Image (cartoon, rainbow, N blue to C red; front, side, top):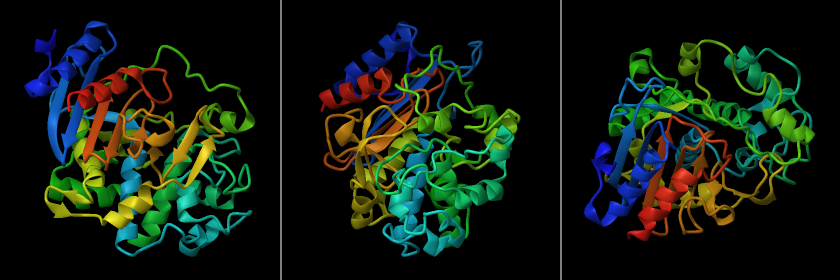
Length: 375
């Protein structure tokens, strides 16, 4: 079965290839790709399966995959660059940069608190049409006027979609570009990274079909906050066309990428800010972005979480390998990208058959843990 996988995998990492092949043999995958980098160099890049539900189009080296909330790691890196460039500070109030945001008890919320899901804006509460999410200015206006669902700074509650609007608006106000534009200009063009927030129409033919989960995720007790985050008719964008979804820039949810590009981008975070030999971020900024901002039982996710400034920290999850200092983000259905500065390792997993696991998909964990075991 391993002969059906393509890509690179040195002999020392043969167990990774065997593990991935076994996942296909068990029927756990439709199409998938796994990349693992050491010192910023991708040493494992394996892919296989199909890019479409009818199994007529191979999942190949050009395939792009919707990575959903793994996009938040990319957005958090763009914010870190703005910090590194002196455009903002993690500890300054959001209202310094976006005055309308300082309403309804949010005037003291800092950039770091907003990025670590502490500002209490888990979703928009007033009924609306799901397609209203495509109106950026309207959504940001509603978020600015909204009262927090709990006292900001006292707890975290994961923001599935609104995170991208808050982070994106902060970035736009200090940088002048949208996150999608900055990603294209600062990372796609100079480094060849195949990561998009707002996918050009010319790339549509590369996108894999997504096969939805066959079961509902286990959220635990359905509280009003969890219901608002995930379970209203308007909690996620839709039901516009697939093309409209791809063109939109929603930095929390609709990134499209391949695994080696995500692994290289996170490798920059693992290797002191250097990407392809070029310094992109300072070490101090990486430490500020990844350090713990709040820890404890999350009010939305049914887990004890440790949050950095937009990053999930491995110290409370142990889903990104054995290093407690690793950090990254995971996306709906199983995708993930992570950085491990202690060992200068990074990695990413993308797939188009989604599982119901909210975090720590067993497929990605097996591949990551197997790769580490080969070191």
